[in-house]
Image 1 (cartoon, one colour):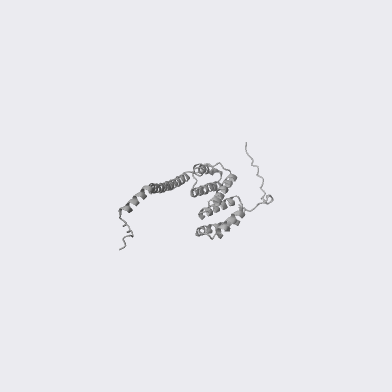
Image 2 (tube, rainbow, N blue to C red; image 1 turned 90 degrees about the vertical axis):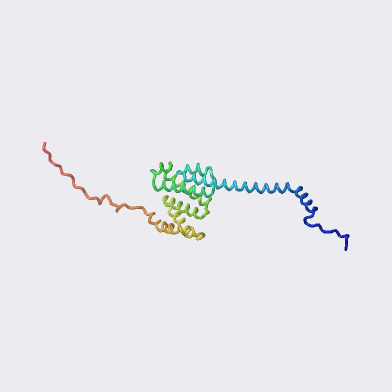
Length: 223
C-alpha cells in the first residue's frame, strides 16, 4: 500500500468542525447583520403598507363627510394625495356644481355654495376636465367625467361640444365598461336637436289681431 498519500478527512472529523467555527467567528457578525437588515426592511414595508391603507380609508371618510366643493378641497384634496380618492373628489365637486345648475340659485345655501350660474359652469368644467386629464384610469372615471362635462355644455347651450363628447363615448371600444354608457350617450345625442330649440308656450299673437272690446255702459244710479 502507498503510505505516502494523505487520507481524505471525513466530514465529521475535528478539523472540519474547527474550520466551521473559525468561519462563523469571522463572518457570523455579517450574517447576523444581513438578517437583521432584511427583517427590518420587511417590517418597514409592512408599516408603510398599513399606513397607506389607513390613509386611504381616512381620505374616503373625509370625502363622504364633505358636502360642498370648498370642504372637499380643504379636507380631502388639501390633505390626502391618493389618486383614487382625488378622482372621486373632483367628480363629486363637478356633480355638486351640476346640481347648482339644475336647481338654480336657491340651491346655493344647501350645497354650501355662493356661485352664480357662470361660476357654476366654470367650476364644473374645471373639475370634470381635471379627472379626464389626470385620472383617466380606470376608464369609468374618464367616462363619468365626460358625461358630466357634456351636461355642462348642454346647460351652456354649447351643443356641438356636447355632441362631440357623446360621439366619442359611442365610438369607445377599448373597454367593456364603456358599453354601459353607450345607451345614455345615444339617447342624449338623439335629443340634442330637440333640446336646442327654444320652447314655445303658444302661437304668437299680433297686436292688430286682438279683438276690440266694447266700452262699458254707464249705469244710472239713484241718489
